[in-house]
Length: 493
Image (cartoon, rainbow, N blue to C red; front, side):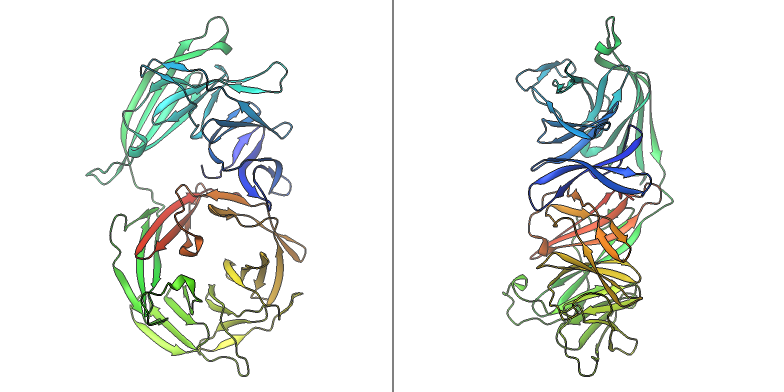
């Protein structure tokens, strides 16, 4: 489940995973209203876990984790974690399907808690399930029996669309299912059904036993396309021993236009590496650096003055020699675009250059309390805005922020290492003249990672104006196979 804010007990909370130089921990963040920052309030060790979903039960948050029988409760009043005791030795009979339920079912995304019934409802494969979360009389241990199957509210499966459940009032709920199936009208369709949960309550409503649903109204409608559309072109460069091939991917409204299609070459760049086609290019130092701005793709050689430019509008290919500052001999370790500038970095913090209009690498006179002669092994970078960027030293895991407006380096102090298996999201906090990385939240991939991160790259696609969700594209490549995936995640401000 993507990281998202949860409203409970009058505050906003966000669960996630962090790695403090050791076992992975499940952390709960709370939005501090005064500082407007997310602050960690509780952690617990959680190895090899993934958050499936959640439900707010009074002043607590119940999280459904993988493995599927693992549930934990977070108490918003005292900020404490408690594991839920489960029992797989019993079973419940599902009248709807005529079979016994012998295992726990994960809660997907957001579940619903109906206080009048003291019951948790959630959707899985368009089937409504119910849990009863109980607490012992000593108020120390939570227990939860196997789920009860209520009823199926749609004939479709998860692979054919996405379903959502919401509470209206009393025992009345609404089921919304958005179709993924292709239609000749070229529009999406939505099924909306309102229903009431029926069952036995006896003399006490808290002992309500749900047994089925009574459909109140159902309608099937066509969805008009949103006026807010995401359109972006992404370019993938595949390096062969003697040349590079450029592929173009178009993303429209969060969908890859090239899905299930062979990518056709958009262009070729003369970026020679070696003569032997059997050489593994990943196992040797790579001499070319590729960057792209709104008009061109740049291929910059590390030790030679060669620069190749491919125009995105005209499709033309140019080549020229970039002059280096007189008396300065440097090897380019990293190239990036910041605003309208093409920036090159050497293997020391003192080597920052930008490419002028006259094709000359102009050296920046650096300020700041850092060792400008210090050798760094740059593992990656992030552009923060049109005037600043941040790089990371692979050997020390230390980050450095450069301000182009003031030609100044600042050390960014991190709280934890980067971990594999997904993205790491964190806030950059400025305290006087120093910068800090806030608590990191792991945004795990929803697919398997088949190979190492050296063969993966990430790009920003866009942001939704209504929900604030951010869209990324991850490209994975090995030999002649390319996997491109677009996904969205909520950003916590």
